[in-house]
Length: 494
Image (cartoon, rainbow, N blue to C red; front, side):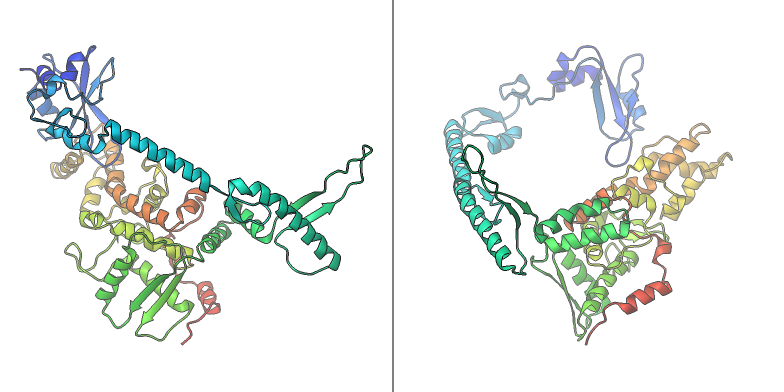
């Protein structure tokens, strides 16, 4: 039986396809991938043809009709395709469904009585929402229901004008929430007085709010970052403080485990004020906060002092200084430790702590929303020296020896790429290197990005591409000016 006949037997919708169709296979990697055509031979598609095209590996093939679109809507329960399947009747609507799709149907099944009740509940909720809908008075900034705000505004306006006139008469030097410029017009010729008019000047609070977007247009990137962080901290200053504690009497391994456990908490508002405390030490003040954030960033850069994944230190970033990339460990990904990394980087940035330094610029480019195709990847960004040396064999014009050809072929096939030839060696080099650095780390970058969004720093990074939350390695070196700035800052008081 041919492949075409078997497809029509297994998937009845294929019987309606007219105009031909072709098969495609996908290349390796994560996320969006290119599809490669599998050409049919003289006898159309057959098992030998498909096995050769896929190198004997099991995988997913994609069917693309040439002239019509494939119908992907779900089959009705009375379809002939379900005749030989075991069925059971839904107890709510009385329709028989195959057992494979009965579970999904039960979650969405609504009979007529439930539908009427749902509509009644929705109407009732809508009425209640309408009754409780609030609005803010533009004069006194108080919230009240819509049905009384118009009446309140007329009285509130008169009170404000009288208050402004009274304070103007006695020349009180107090700060007013709202300043009014009052003017009274002469009566018109018709004998009707023109109504009292006034203009409202914004209060200090309103002016502060209007400045909240200045960080978007501020030409200096450092000042823009400062404006943004101050605004975020001001918005969350009344929130529940984050209590960060570190017991200096513990060994380094237990300290790091408690550190990671704190940042793994879900449902936290990471932009709220922080309170840091060293248990077993009498130190207090801003110095404790700096010590806490410095420890966090140092562990991110050089590793945590506990064993995860059969290593003496658990490093979330690996590679050379200036070319650090997220670890490719599946265990760390499944443990959401890169989400923890994003949560560590964000608060340290908001509260003036140190920034993570030495991360590969290609990784930073993709992390902050850039395309992997436009990232400038360097060979030093590849942390695995074996993979790096294999890829470097393609960087040149010299013909590959048999000893050099085999590792390149093995690596290419492992990543669903063709073997090296004289014609494609440059193209293959440009595919292998980005995949080794970026393609294998897209899930890690997604977790870090999510952590940055949770800590409220993502709007700044997405709007201001010039703001650097990751320092270059040479910007992290100690200079005399840095020592002077630290010595001029607040000290730890004991």
